[in-house]
Image (cartoon, rainbow, N blue to C red; front, side, top):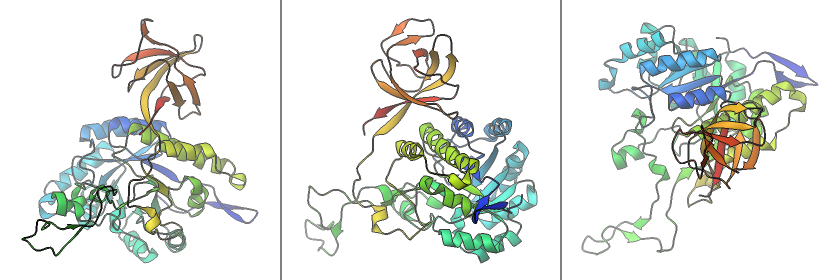
Length: 428
């Protein structure tokens, strides 16, 4: 691949002529299919070994083969995270695993450990090697170092700023990937051992228990062992909220023009453990924003709908990470935050009868007549309506959609398309 950015100038403004890649997470084959249908150019997944999300529904080699075949039909690529820091016992089987990834058609691995990179170069040369964000790369000399080793792409640390990205792109001609959305680590690009200490689960080998997001109470040390308060003197009142130390989530939807004009080659969304609704909603919003920019760079403006859609998938308050300034105490969550109204994915459109106005829906969650629902999809579908009645495939009336994956018929107020989703608001 080449990292050269094709540019033009419109009234003195630098305008890119090539779209950046939109890279989406997929914790399962189903999520991968949604990510591709909703606009991802590439998808990153985890395998049964060497990844940092051991609790995700990670892919077998056969599932990877199916994922590659599906993605290829839509012009998308599949990357595999192999981004653990390997211990000696992890090395056995590495060569066979990497050769297996190459054989099933994986486009690239995302790696942090030099031995995994070197082994891929030696035994699976068709695999591109992308340096993981776990390497905490933030300066152009480090990027140059990786380029000289033959690395095709560097995933920057989440701590890299816009100014640092600009300098990197001016000095080094290699692909740059940056996170634009998702959870942020309270430590330094994942360099954390809280999980190891509290639960004996190694965060750098795929076992992070997200200890920073637990709820804590504070105690003073130094109380004599004979005291009933030997465990520590409480520094809180019974009515106080527990203390947490998680960070706010990253979102650059309001600054997508800045990201494009920075020259970043791949826009990465975090969230292999997230839901189908999260993946589809977030990918769809960024896809529309990127396409709108390239349709008319000079007059590009943010559509408030994209921001509103992002908020419907948000688990935590959002910020812009390190892109514009270093986060401070306002960017961490030290006490219970006000939860936004959540949305549940309740149905998938699998067919539509234009002559009758009925949609065939695959049930994904409970719903019933009288509830207000919202339809959205990758082809511009977006409307709300109240459910008037529900029928089964045979036309019999139902009092509710109760059964997982049941096919039902629903009268819809506007045309819908296959792969459109139906959701309902859920107060948290």
